Amino acid sequence: MSINFRHDVENLLKEAKKQNKPVLLDFSAAPM
Amino acid sequence: MWPDERVAKFVNDNFLPARVHVKEDPEAFKKYGEQYNAHWTPTVLELDPNGEEFYRLEGFLPTDDFLAQLMLGRAHMDFKQEKWAEAEKRFREIVDKLPNTDAAPEAMYWAGVSHYKATNDPSALKETAKAFKQRYKDSSWAKKSSIWV
Picture 1: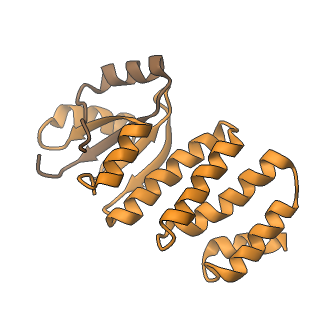
Picture 2: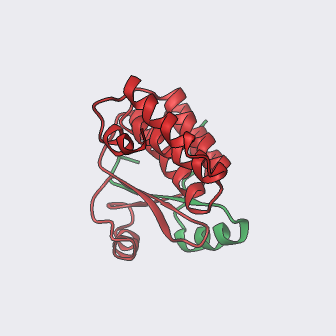
Picture 3: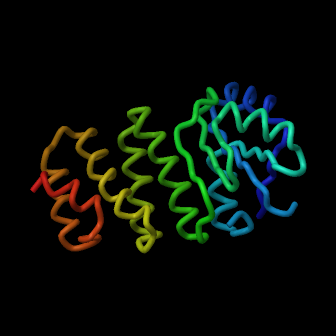
């Protein structure tokens, strides 16, 4: 299992509001 | 941290996950770093559905501690929303599954508070204080609960 991190934060925040679901926002410098 | 199966499952079950990368997308990093006052990596924020921050982790943690902190944040969200039973369940899950993490004593404290909030029964706090005499005796949370005995 992996985490499908999204990068379009603005859209994700809108979806979170619609779905009433919390958001996990990772500020990262890890190799991608 | 992130590749761990337990972490991935917890994140996928509980959140919509997003990442801003300091090197891959410096503009987004600057924008959201300023918006959320995040200027160091790793910083992980738990946001409510309205985009308001309710929990923050800064700096690296070993996997068990990282997972426990993620769980703690999610439990605090239920607590703030006055979902006492759900919050208590989440707090107790941390103590049961990740008892050796730094988050566990805090979770035990808030599990007792959640039970009290749900029932208005002061014995919930007394029992929590008693439990701290057996476990996590040297933690700051044991000191905080000592007034309940």
